[in-house]
Length: 58
Image 1 (tube, rainbow, N blue to C red):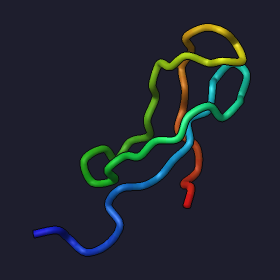
Image 2 (tube, rainbow, N blue to C red):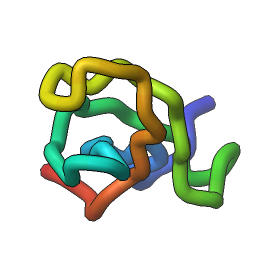
Image 3 (cartoon, one colour):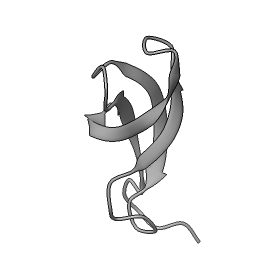
Image 4 (cartoon, rainbow, N blue to C red):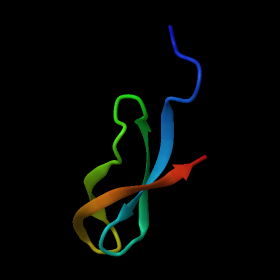
């Protein structure tokens, strides 16, 4: 049975080089309490860079 409350949080991913928001994704707050750090392709930099999680989006 599902728990009450919001478990999945919408968040944006920001390029660590050029600081542009490139991706929107979700994460489960209970299973992954730490912030996300993913290697993704940045269209502005034209290369694969680290993307960090930013504030919660609605």
